[in-house]
Image (tube, rainbow, N blue to C red; front, side, top):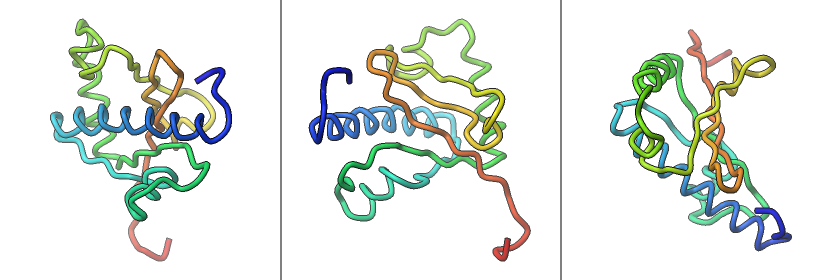
Length: 130
């Protein structure tokens, strides 16, 4: 999205993030992996039926069991083309290492424009009190 500034850039980025969300939801549905809209762009779009002004940053939530299933499914993609694996030729899953990898272990990135969606890892808790 280089060269586009202001509100047009934000709107275009939001639209590109939603395209990536479609890729993720198609993939996770086919693989029977449970994910949810976490916060930021997606919750605003869902709750208000419109994007929040100047809000970018799409986040998909994934629990620990679904995370293990995702790792297994991604490992089975070896030898497949990107389009066979994800249903789109312009995406790549990036696995994060180091700082914050326990919170945001993956990003699905559009390799043409750099727009990405974070996967946020949620751990189970024994109570709602924290």
